[in-house]
Picture 1 (cartoon, rainbow, N blue to C red):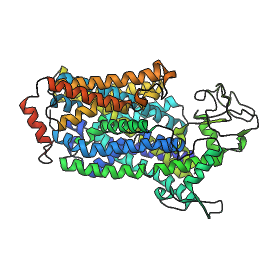
Picture 2 (cartoon, one colour):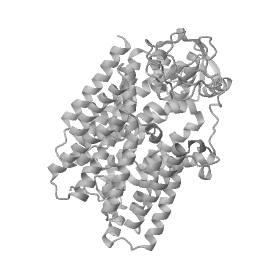
Picture 3 (cartoon, rainbow, N blue to C red):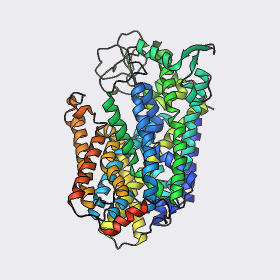
Picture 4 (cartoon, one colour):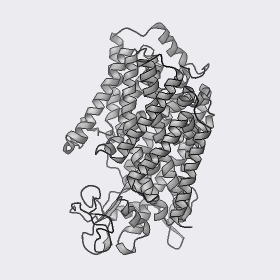
Length: 598
């Protein structure tokens, strides 16, 4: 059976499974819709949290970033993994004990203020839309390649699937769908990783293969360690050594801290801990989720290294007509571009960009072909020896093809990529809809609406959110792809301090929380916009504040948030007595009730 047929079967089968689960777990109340009824088992919640956590960025992009950035990419592994530990140990059990449905709900009640709640709603919507737009675009790219449709059609298919189980099932449908999606994506990630590890190092576990010696063409031990060989190969081509870093220590520290505190403050993950029956279950599910996430995160460095080596071996100095089929397929998708600068018909890899910007083609392959059958690029060439552009997002998706693995593995990875993108998109869309229907409508604007009306509003808000996210996926404004990475910084600068102080500092009042959130968000947003969009030519280390890049500035915003919130709270009235008692009570790790019904 060929790859295309298998891909249709695997992806189609997974869709049927997701839709079946959505019908089975249809939400009948607002509690079902917001927190899956509060009765999810810890292991199921752990798997769902892992799927929610590991978005398309983790499944598709992280290994690609590691493959190209090498040592520098370790900041993402440290930041995202550390963020989860921070969330699991420091925030989740206490938030669960507080017993509210959403993050704005926690902030609104803890700070006894609808203004604080509304500011939190604005932060949730801003951070979530920033993040989800990239997820929908990623879904479109996966569909475009593996189902042979254009990207826009792929986005519409993704919207239809998410619409079905998010609107129908709410958190209940999303939770059980995410459990299935986790099984699909982790199997899809690990199977090719194990195959490649055995082929290249003889080790079954990619984690040990990463530090092992590579096998030669005859399958014998070459005695050369994988990372040493990779260092040699990439430096021969003019790249920085794979194990060397180019970022300054202070920038690495601030980026890691922004990713860590930002991911700990992302609302779509926090809300998952409201779905279990007890505080004890929140802690257990956090442990399961950490185990499930570690399976992928500890394999990613090996996958990135295997991919980089395989890619160079397969593509560099190969005649265009002799390249494997996957190269042409990804070129058709617009994620690979080749410009034959020296006219020899062979593909040369070298340091630097081969041309300005991302590939822009004169037409389809049938409409405009070069001398060797390649798609004709309209980009201006650069003055270095590099000839090929390979989008780092395709590394994981193309890895089985690059490694010449069986067709069913390639189809499995397609289903895994779709599962990763859809799982996070659904979680984010639910957070947006609950922020609007519950926090804005029910708790602020129209508190007298019935539960049935609130549930209807939640479903309506989910529909609107899906349409807006789909619009950004189909018509991505230039800034969307760039700002996705900054959602973490914005979350760190806005949510993390007020949640942390809301749990551990009973003197923190509403005036301090509101002033801190607005200061952190405004500072971080302005810094990013200035260097990324107003004056991009100034975006270099000598112009950055304290040498901190826009990727790491969320940490400075977070520190400002802490400082302003603390100062304002000290010069204004303390919180009411009953709020201080609540803060003392939620720090005691026992006696939590169910999530509060509204």
